[in-house]
Structures are given as structure tokens and as C-alpha cells.
Length: 308
Image (cartoon, rainbow, N blue to C red; front, side, top):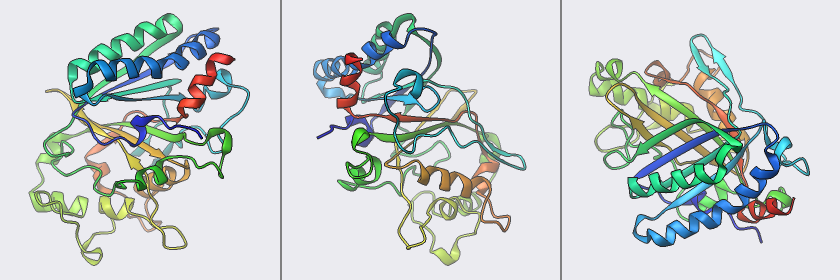
């Protein structure tokens, strides 16, 4: 039975480091070997820094997958669904390899990220590194709790992981979408608290969701809490974290799912709206600057890369 990468469904940590690489030409054989060794290396540091609750995820980009592993492809792995409507845009950007490092110690993340870059060496070009952190009691920098609708307990696995009956070769893996959002905090902070709550569709301090009839059709919770044709909730598992300094602040959005479709449906609801002009008004105060689709394969699959 395929074993998932533990970072996919792990509970939140205090610190996160997100590393995004492009593969260099003619380095695929080296990269297969290096990626196969990463989980064991992470396990070593997780044991060494046992109090840090270290987890990680290694993922391969949709546009790079066939080059690295031409023997097969996850059934629903497609490029990032770039979208635009008026001045709202979800761009598609580059990224061949994604590695997520999370723990409760920033120094542990730094050590492990350094070792990852040393292992991958000159086979990759590090194109982005984002250091993120837990803010207050799991809130975004807007002051609202992030991931309120996240699945809990064992249901996290049901939502995030590909099942054997759906795609046996890639069972235990997860479809991953990332977006780095940059917030306009000056504009956001000009809103009174009630106006901010109306944008989200829930209260700020107590994190109580508005009744459905009290939500504006443009509320963030209205545009992302969706149901399918059978009335079932459309779910993703978010592992997002805030990032920022005194000049730039935002959210590094991370979405895991057993299918690539739920993320696309939610993004379309936010940007294109409901067909009646009702888009997610949170997009007036934040914009996505990146967008990449990946697949985070099982530990079994990563180990098998060394055999190629």
C-alpha cells in the first residue's frame, strides 16, 4: 500500500519554508536520484530535531512531469488554470520542483532547506524561497482565521489523497496548487471591522460564520464554500501560511486534494464569479503573483525514482 508524504495531511506548524526550483537541462537522471533520497534525509533531521515536529512535501510540476518521469502520469495532472476577469487575475508561473519544509523551529527549517539545496546542487535553479510563519491563533495577516473550512481528523486523508481505485499507480499522492498572494494591507486597514467581516462573511474576533442569508454573494466564504450537483461540499486541504516583512505581506496559499478539479472550481468562483457579476471581493485587497500546479507523489513513488 502506498504511503503518503506525511507533510500533506500534517497539522499546522509555527514556521514554513517554501522552495521553488526549475530543473536545469540534462539533469533529469541526477534529479531522480536526488529526489528519491530526500525523504530519508528529512526523516534524519526530523529525528535529530524531534521537538520541532518537522514535516516536508516534495512535488513535481505539471509542466515538468513528463520530462522527469515519462513512464506514466497522474490522471488529472494539468497545468495551472490561469484565469482573468477584468482586473482580477490568477497567473500561471514556472516551477518544476516544489519542496515544502514546515516545523515549529525557524532554525530547523533553515538547516533542512540548506541541506536540500546542497543535495540538489547544480541540477536546479532556486527561483523562489518564501519563509512563512503562524500568525496569532492561525490567522491570515488580515486578522481573520485562515483555513476555517479545512477537513479535520481522518477526513483530511479522504480529501487530500488519491485513492487506489481512482489511480492505482499514483495512489497516496496529492494534487497540489500554490499561489503567493500579496496583500494591500494599507487599503485593507482602511476598512472598518464590520466592512472587513462582510468581505469575509464571518466575524473577525470570534470567527463566527454569517448565516447564509446574511452573506453577500461577494463574500469570500460564499465564493469558496461550494457544493457539487449532488449537494456535497467541494473540499480541499489548505496548508497555507502568512509571510512578509515591513514592505511586503501576504499569504502563501497551498492546496492539496485527491483531484485537481476542486481547486479549479473554487478559483473560477472567486475570479469569474457566479455569472451575475458577483466575484470574491477579497480580491480587491490581495492579488496572486504566482500560480503553479504540482503532484506530490507517495513515498513509494519517490523511492522508485532511483530505479530509473
